[in-house]
Length: 72
Image (cartoon, rainbow, N blue to C red; front, side, top):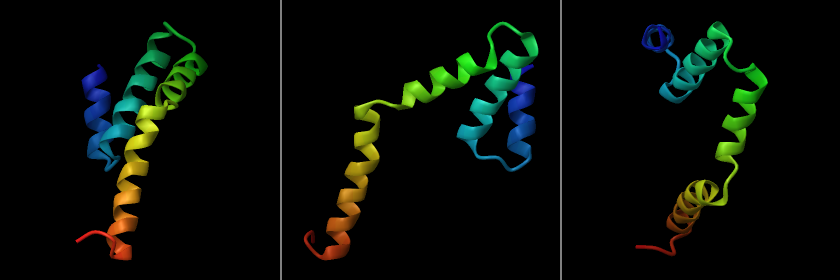
């Protein structure tokens, strides 16, 4: 069931990350094992970490240095 929901969302043109999160949320809501707010809270708290935030900022710093002419 989870794969079917994921494939339906992907065929609708939704990006992979959102389709994965959406299919998991729909499946958990459908089965009723966990309340939806618990799933959303865990997803948000999972990406609220300094190592995960450091990666996009490192890429941003590299792009800024490249555009400013600091790097070769």
